Length: 239
Ligand code: GDP
Image 1 (cartoon, rainbow, N blue to C red):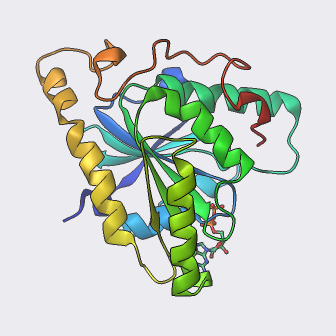
Image 2: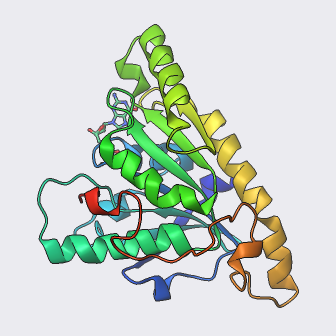
């Protein structure tokens, strides 16, 4: 059985210090209303992401356990019109810190509406994350809203353009409504989690997996530190 099917809500955090011990995790992020919750639910075959939509949790990072210290991590949707500056600042700090310093994070699933791909906010998100050198997989959701031909055109366009923002990215079409693209997405994400296995060995050997993030696979950022205002796109990210 796919490990995604056994996912269950583990915890919500408002501070990185509260993040659970982990040997591998995949984060989902995207503009509000792009279909991120639906994609998570489709992937896990349950109503998991309902939790992240409950009042009070929408600005938190939600961890869903896949068993054996592996997680799917639901990051708050961005693009809300107006939030108080203080809220925005603390949210940016939490999100930026998570994306840039979380060693067990294997890769980022970036959810975009196939009809509005690669918005400025998506580009900002990539600007935050890509210096880590970790992979990005783009789910172009609501593919059912376009004809097959139009959807393929968007796919090719995004594949062509994304390299400028994220050299280590793959892209696919996805529809929660039609349940299409599910196997392709699961295959990519499982591969990332499988590649995090050496960390599990580290844990078994009694070594803290986050001890030296530079030794982690794919970690190329020299200074994985979240400094507000010092990151590409940090200024233009609106929640
Ligand atoms: P989120 O805010 O990004 O978590 O988005 P939701 O998953 O809550 O979806 C926002 C809206 O888009 C809801 O009305 C969903 O029913 C709809 N939606 C989500 N995924 C799909 C899809 O694959 N196809 C279609 N047609 N609608 C979708």
